[in-house]
Length: 556
Image (cartoon, rainbow, N blue to C red):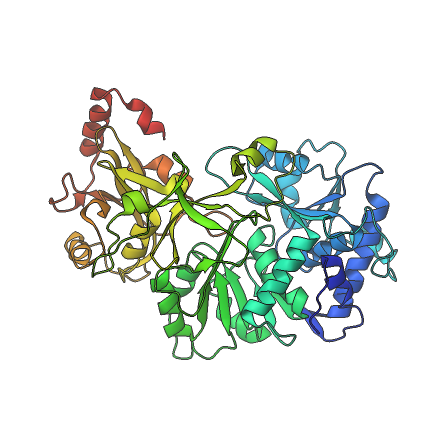
């Protein structure tokens, strides 16, 4: 059933006349053929509605409903591109995203209509999927066949996706993905994970984000496997969905795995059809806990959102490492200031990184990069590709055998008393604390020390109140926790603030710092015990910033 099509359109066409069940959503089931027929009808509709001379782009503001994969397939058949729109954006920011893509058609649903009502979207026609008007419009295109209606040539280099990548500053950038890259990614993951036509891919990550489309939908399409959709991620419904749809594969990003582990354990958690979960940011501790509880192997991978670099895990990858560069990539860890390669990491007998200050650098691809650019953003293109190298914006270090270890984003670097630290490394250590369901580490600017380490901890439901003495004992028992890694500030939250893609909302955490409504514990010196941070402490600290003439740091 698998196909080797060079374009997404060929992969979609290969499912025509395939009458096996291929899509599940709530109480609905559709065959592969029905999905393909629906895509052909939408391609014909797009060809009629898109104004002549307009960019062949359609903005999609939907939850994970069957309309989303059908519009992805329709765009591929028509030589157009889908721009996934983040439903957590609001007002002028949301309008900016839609208009930036130059889409002349917006596909949405009634639940999201309040988001666009009142927005100034000149020249944009809105289609509301769950209405009789939309259903009647589609009925006039029933009988369309794949390839009959196009708005632009369907070629390997044709754009098929514009997906926004988040950043700590500035407006989101719309990364370009062509038919060849998306089809190639799907075929590669089929080989890597051994995806079979009888598999069912559970898509619970939002489809406006690249992870769900590139790592979940595309390999299912390439293998002829089915997909089961969850409107929005739900930790409590995850296992029931997996069993209901007989799902064998899923992807995750951000803190999704921690949320699943925070659900109430059951004796039959192992009783599920899953074979593999593929994603990023689970961490070695949570991956082990997930395998022990659910009997499912998590495969941590790395691929920059824009496609410029990727790392593959192999059987001999050591604990904590992501893997090695995929064939064809010339990956290096370099010092951005000098553009020289960082020395290999050195570890002591307990696994502690000894030379993080010199070994941690930015991951770059010095070879031929598959990065295809950002839509209408030459400044961002130039920042990403400099002197012929693709700069990922991610911190890594490499051991003597060439295995690569993730150390966080470049803006997650901390510098404490002239020593460079990586937030991701500290998070992996703190996540071993059994009372914590989620951990985030970030820098709080300090007028003297440069940065101080702050950690936000979400405790498991039912966990006893925070005990500073037991937490201090936990810290002292971690062999790879250096003295400067110990958090100065601890913020306790009921739930970790996250973005729409389940990634920790670090910008909000950094912005609040120790001036937040949640309980904060701190120690004034590394040897002092943790105690509650009081309004008096806040007043004293603010005075310290002012005395140093560094009030500017408080706005970071």
